[in-house]
Image (tube, rainbow, N blue to C red):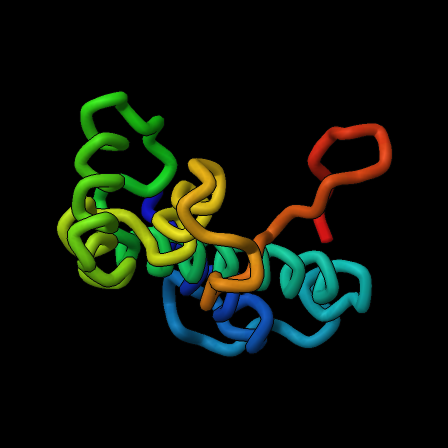
Length: 132
């Protein structure tokens, strides 16, 4: 079943309407119980979150999450040393500006203070990355 169809069915039930016929549900229906309504609303929220996440991912550049090859890294360094901006490099490499700046920082070509984006992770005392 498609997520949108499931969402439509759950929303109909929350609204007290039979999703098959469009008729109002009978008074005292199980769907009018508080716990059942809360469960249906949780399902609606979960499906909406999945749809929103998919929409955000669809708008990301093509190479998001892919490992850097040695060749791509060399092209990045060359472009940066030739004066190309990180934003221009990001477009050409199909990566986010954050990814470009993080890689430039990792390579020692910029400092954390020179970044226009913030890092998602900070180093914990143990040396492992943790969410900030």
